Length: 577
Ligand SMILES: Nc1ncnc2c1ncn2[C@@H]1O[C@H](COP(=O)(O)OP(=O)(O)OP(=O)(O)O)[C@@H](O)[C@H]1O
Ligand SMILES: [Mg+2]
Image (cartoon, rainbow, N blue to C red; front, side, top):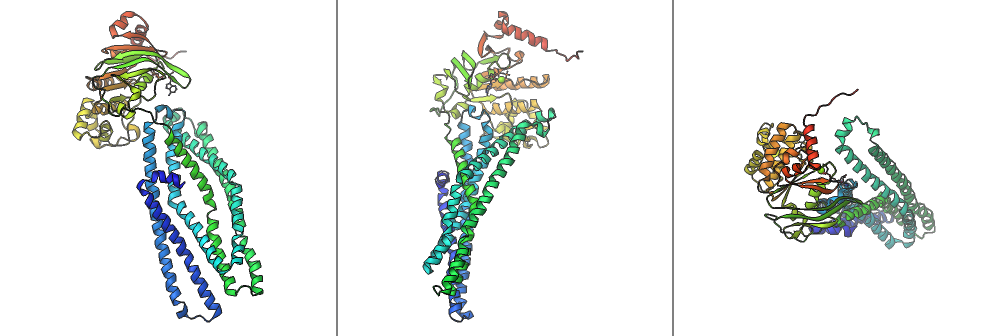
């Protein structure tokens, strides 16, 4: 555990060492008054005791109390500073690492687990290093110190008191696998429910629209019930074990009473020594009782540390080229094939996109258009064939460097719970307010932004929920204009918008796309009439290619698609009997 913490402690490691030194000193200060107690007790029983006799001891006692408080405060402050510093570093490290993982990592429900790794596991580590570490240190030091005192005074009585502790520890050790299994099951159930809650919250709109009630959302229901059962099962295992452990450990006390009184009767020990041992034995057992709950916490912790390690050791996408400019470079898909798992969705995709031209990807839903654009951005790497920009295979380019050369306006716009200004500035953090406003004007957002209650300082609510779909899209375009990257990918940006909004967005796109290499994915074929080349994708293959007129003239699949769309322009919903 300490090794794990050390890895992320950075310069804070000396803070942890300081916390440990203070914890040890605190333990020593807590034990020292016992020695004074012995001296006072002995004096009181052997001779008469006046206030002046004990006055110096009283002063010493006060000094020890003050020192213990001082050490305790410093130990807590240092361990908290270490814990939260390390926690923050861990979260950043995980966040940074997640950014470098291929998008494929986030498939198959792993994102819930990942967020759980961030929240629960890092929280466990924080908790361990802020309180548990400190508590465990003092819980061990005080009994060791007390045993040492006792040992110096009487070996036999000391052995009686400490003899039951190894038994108790062995008892816990014997059941450790059971605790482990319960702890692992509880944590995994915790992760499951976190991912189910996430799914529930993300899908809340759909759930509401279908009027689904809690229990009908099966996965969340099952996950939460399982969490309840696993949590209970863990506690139901640990609580009796802790109590039995405490009982075995403190069996030394009756042993002390039994043999101690016999030794006193045979004058083997004095009354002062016997009384002193009785008092000390309580001080000896008390901290040992308190550590039982920490055994399960330690199991949790190593489980969490393992989970964090799994995330952090997932290999990042390779790419040596960290400085890269795509300006003026052609893009080529060279016989590219790609599968999601076992299912091949792209077959031998081959095309060139000259710099500064527009390539439109059209075709039926599920044909593979979005996947093609994702491969260019290296959200996934191709199975076979290659994608090149100029002379570079995209696999050689570091993902950060590659994405810095691209602007993506995706099917679903991602806006943040932040001001409009910051949402647009996300495209280029160095941009001034004036640059942001210029981009907003070019994306035709300026007017509706000015109508918002606080203009550019209006906070947009989670995922831009206070804006209409078309407005959100235009904010995303403004952000893209601000980024000003040489490659632009627009994915179905005009789907499901009213004609006026669509017209605005078309204009905004024109500002964004001028002199860029553009990949436009559109269902509405009217929006890509001016594309330099159109690729008609069907079942993961390029079925037809050409410009708008030549494709219509071919009279093939594209023509049928176009005709269908023209007919669909004026569709009506008719009630059938
Ligand atoms: N993350 C994924 N995991 C597994 N299969 C996927 C994934 N994303 C897409 N697919 C599948 O790959 C195929 C191509 O999907 P893609 O999203 O590229 O289609 P598209 O042409 O963009 O469709 P649409 O026009 O509906 O957006 C589809 O059959 C889809 O089911
Ligand atoms: Mg798509």
